[in-house]
Length: 447
Figure: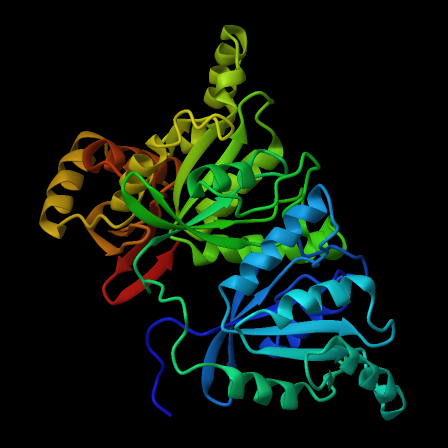
């Protein structure tokens, strides 16, 4: 089969809370991607994943529980599910066969019967032949034949995927630009305003916002226009203290937050300006650096600060964020929108630095003059000599120094600082590794 190009058709998985939608998504994908937990309401946003079945690729959208009578946070989840239905090509409506059709299922079915999209009714939790009679009762929903499936055990999931493929159109309804927008991971500890910022830049309610810390448990992509340019923002679950101390859905959400950083090109670390810069904030920044991504630090709630707190924050930044003086910094208010438009310029600048390549001749001319002025310190009575420097890679910039001896960490930091002074690299980590040539023919790489 020829490789698919262009946008993929979309399959929305909908249903009331805790009927097994995320488990079914994982079964479709053949891996644990969606957060699954025996608690209703774990999935609170719409989350898109790419799936492959019988050589055909499509996008699966997992949604929060559908409840037409919901209020508050529940109503926000309902809007997310309705949006997924409007923008999908096929709707998979999941019902718990062990419970049967509830009033909520009947209300959802009434809306779905009016939909112009193909609807596949799934009777989930049919674990054996004896429980298939429960599935047959769901004919009463008026959505055609119920498909008995056990998402947990995989029973009949292949047959269901075949039905989904048959229902998919040749071309997706919504044509979306592929490959264009730069990928931005929005990260930070819980409740610093990540979802509020997404909603501000998207100018619509794309993420569920609630004053309870940890409302977002899955990443949700948003294509937004900022500074006259489109960006792909990923709103991620708040990073917890340590992945191995988190439990249940926090554990998997933390893992996927790391994956979101890996999948992005630039990360915006959101920090609450009205609170002390914490260890958690620093840990998030470390993760971005270790992943080698461009970095913008956005101080949210800036409009709430008085003069004393601003001075105190500057001291905290000087003390606790000294190692990332190179990071791009912007002060914003997600709530009022103040300073949010400036974010685009900071993102562009950080990405440009992330992709900067210094010509080898210019690099060596500069480093030779630098080393002559400040040679590396002697080690064991002999001072190492730097023979040659090359930039091995970009995204982020990586430099290799060929030397006759080991270079101390302090001298490598000195080299990094001087390279930044000369060539910029504002908003990107840079890596310097040393290859020691201790004599003719021998070469030992040192990181």
